[in-house]
Image: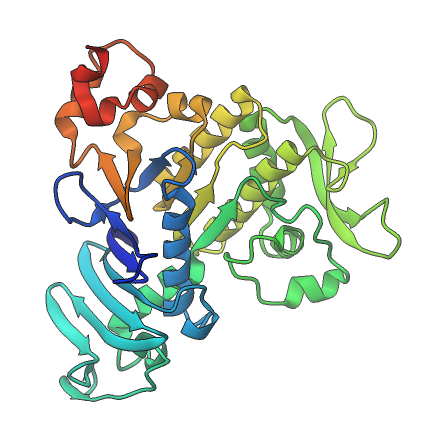
Length: 381
């Protein structure tokens, strides 16, 4: 299931209100494709946009409750596409209480919290429904009666959020391999890459070859990869170890460069979700951070290829010129902060300006640095 559009406001009506505006000329939703790069200067709303999506995923999958979120007043209006069918979901929360919640499928409303009605499939009619104001109605579904809500739950459960500038699980070890293999791991558990890989070795015969081939595409030539006892820790523990071409010994995850491990971690987790048939939405904040230009470029190309071939949706953020120059403008969403709004410019709402830039002969970074996305040809006058 793909997220097609997002409207979001938090702390509505307060001095700290912030909202996403999906067009420079009107209060429109932000539209997404299968591959998306969110560009902007610091403090324009890149990470906040990904956090808003992560919070929504946590809520609709029941992973977190409203009381555990940083913000207790917010308004979501989102549209998904599930096998060609639009699903629209509206959620309004004020001071920790749900005041409005609705879901429609293909334009037909199936759940309306204000009206206290929900469609029951086996009865073929809307019946009375009520739940606590602190709880979401979509988390209280019966999969036989409300199968139309299951895609929303699966989207939330399978969404993964990577902070590329973080550790991505480099310092997380597996105490007991048998436990790791048997425990339930979800794509959102992005710090548990050592456990992901240990489990993948048991489930998928080709996982080693897949990861080795992917790492080669990024520029890391590996001969082998395995779960192995870590060398330099005071207590017993297991992690990921690789054997690089030209080196006699294995390098475990604590010895790897941060850049190499970040690439390895994301590759393992994406391949695990694909092999386990759990593709969904991947959020990557600060893609390419800590990698040299060539490897950053190759990793991004690999992720984009995986997305195009496997029904993944990828939403990445960056303000790195090398990343910008590598990703075509057709995938860009440029943010300009205007007061309490993050205003987005993209091919859909500013097509003429995006098209004009293709005739300048300049690189993509200039499109951003010179604010061509706002000024057009006036940027050079």
